[in-house]
Image: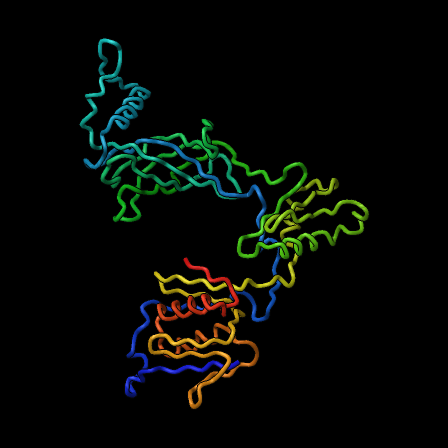
Length: 365
């Protein structure tokens, strides 16, 4: 492989570093082993269906604010209900209704939306979770506020089942968004929260999006079937790929310990798992991540004061020699040596992709 390159303005002998400093560091990562294949376990690229995070949610009151609350009708009604439950009743009108006008000027209270995430592994009664608090309405800040005891529902919309209660001191994580805060260990689970992973005697493995394709799904199914080939002779296979990202595994009748069986599946060695050809760029941060073996076709590019050619050479110009196909990493290394900025590199990568010479997925974040 030959990569030729030169600059149009050599800066009259001045150090190349003086031409332009890199605004943000360039990250070039080898995604995987040096070779074309890497040894993995099934669990490295698959998750078990049913083992997902779940979000609990509730609506509560934050009190103790320094005049930054929102005394609207909804907040006033909610505060009246809380006071009533606590035995501190408001004055009544002739029809026996609370006189809410006595609370209308209270700017130390606001209505908030509260969320907490139960981890994929589930949780047990008594576990404490962090929760986030976001103001509803026109509140200016939650600084100094305290969340009153709030029932947490979910995760299914419409369900009135209470799984936890949240309360505690609100902490602002970002002064730029004072209407959002967090309560550390502020949500207490009131019962066990289990994520079932067995349905109809079967387990479903879900391949992560970076590896999901028909070939990978079929390869995993074949590997999982090998230990059962003799005992399952003449019958349906234990594992069946049902799509690009899913493998359904039937639990043998003699396997009473489902947890141990799933652990065995996830520990199964997955040999020769092909590395995804992918380039990830983030123009905002100037980050570029390139797979170790991403290749490009012969191409010539003129960009600003750079001239780049792969698969050939300019007479008398410095060049990089590398055996085998042109690897994108070598090209980027050459440009980086010339002090190309992240913006330059990203523009060139996009141009190579548009030309059809980049043999990889180009993903922009």
